[in-house]
Amino acid sequence: MAARRVPLVLLACGSFNPITNQHMRLFELARDHMHSTGQYQVVGGIVSPVSDSYGKQGLVLAKHRVAMAELALQSSNWVTVDEWESQQPDWTETVVTMRYHYGRILKEYERSVGMHNNSNPSPQLKLLCGADFLDTFKIPGLWRDDHVEELVGHFGLVCVSRGELQPERAVHESDLLSYHRHNIFHVREWVKNETSATEVRRALRRGLSVKYLLPDSVIEYIHRHNLYTEDSEMRNKSAVLRPLVKQAQEPVKSLDD
Image 1 (cartoon, rainbow, N blue to C red):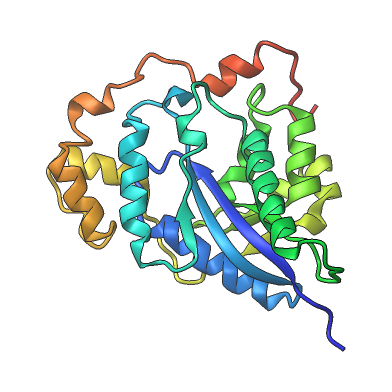
Image 2: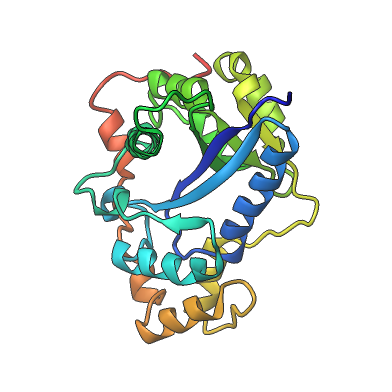
C-alpha cells in the first residue's frame, strides 16, 4: 500500500511591494515540484506581507499591499493572503511568523481529526522563497543562528531559482544549510521570468506601462490610490532596516563564522 502523502502548506513572506505575477508563479512552481517528490500533497498557500515597521525604502502602507495581494489572488483557489504579520506593531522575525501559522494549521488539523484515531501524517509548513533568499543568511547581523536552525531544520525551505542564481552553491558554502540540505527543496524555473517589484515601481514612477507584469486589478488599484510615486519612493529613505536594528540588540554570528 502506498504511503500517504504529507499535507503541506507553503508560506511566502516578503514586502509584496507590489505583488507581481512572478510572486504568484512561485506558488504554482513549488506545488508542482513538491507533488513530483511523491511525498507531499500541497493543501494551501499563504502570502504574508511584512509590517510597515520593516523600514524598507519605498514600502507603501501594509493596508495597500494586503489589498493588492487579495486582488491578485482572487483567481487562485488555494493561495490566500494573511494579514497577521502586516498588522504587528513591530517587524516580526520570519521564524516567529512561521510558528504562528504552524500553530494555527495544527489547531485546524486537530479540530478536523477530533478524538478519532488517525494514522494520517500531520501537516507541515515550509517557507517558499526565491533562490536569492539563501544569500541573506550570509549578511552579518541579519539572522540569528538559532532562527536559521529552526527555519531550515524544523520547517524547511522550498527555493525557486531566479535567473543565474544558484541556490545549491549557497547551501554548499554554509555548514548549517548543508547539514539540513535534505529539508531544502530546489525548484528550477525553466521559463525564465525576471519580473522585479523594484523595476515595476520604477516603471510606475516614470509613467510607463506595467501591463502583463501585474494583474489588471492591481494596476487599477495602484492608479486609483496614486501609489508608487517619486514621493512614496522616499519613504524610509534614511531608515535602517528593522531586522538589523532589532538583531543588533543581542550578539549574532554570521553563518560563515
